[in-house]
Image (cartoon, rainbow, N blue to C red; front, side, top):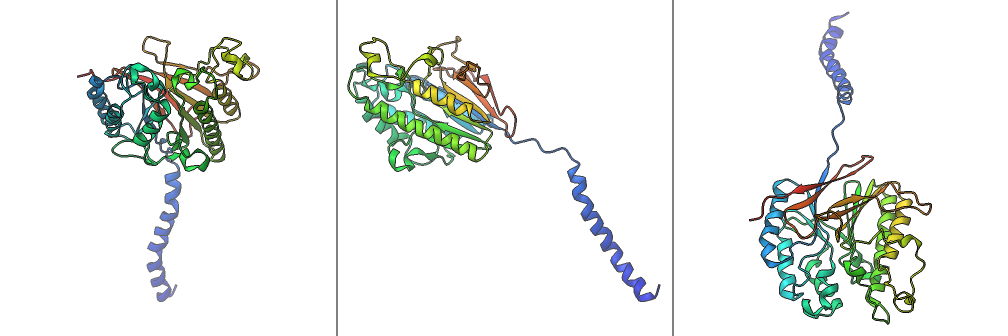
Length: 346
């Protein structure tokens, strides 16, 4: 080999070795174990605070969630006691409390927040007027509450449902969180006669918003959907055997019309056609001592349990316990819910 070629090879050899190392490096990285998926930890609460005296304890609970390094708080409605006034002063005070959350906070209305405001003990307000005021106070922006809000999509962006600012959705990894205004008090269905205009308009808005959420989840191939509402739909009241609701339910038949019937039917239909997991979160009315429970209450037309649908009823009216939802992306079972003890109230 002549001297010039030997000199050239001497110069190129280190570069060729480096190139070989650069090519080999990705193969070495590929041999490592894949990184664990980033989980999302969510605090689930409802019916807090019940009275002004509980506001300080709720504020401490929200601070505790941040200290635990959770990612999000979901409040499933009920920001005042059932005999507490629905005045602007009370609603504004509770809005300020939730908005001071160090974590982003999703809130959906409960019956004590607006639909029961018609009762004399709550001030004898017009329920629809109080709902509109609640919308002004709690949902002025396309974002969650809290000191570090996250963007959300609201149903009010649609021209046909301009007033329904409380209905929202947001993505958390490969899971969609959907908030609906479905209060207790039989979903605010009134038996007084005449057209149930508020109930009917909101029922249609909820139907459209829930259907759209499942459609989006299918289009994006999402792994799960979390549906948040306040009211317990009463899955065990024999609703599967009921026919189409009519005005006769409240008059000639002398029975209470199920205000959640269409909601339950839609949940069953949409969940049966969804390949991922569905989690319904709502406040508790009864059950265990603290109201917390997890079950699979939906069955298909053949009576078989829908295994991809799970219901969580939350502890209510207590700052001593809360539920933690852990969302694991891409997992076959993306949802895990555990009851937690809170620090002792001050």
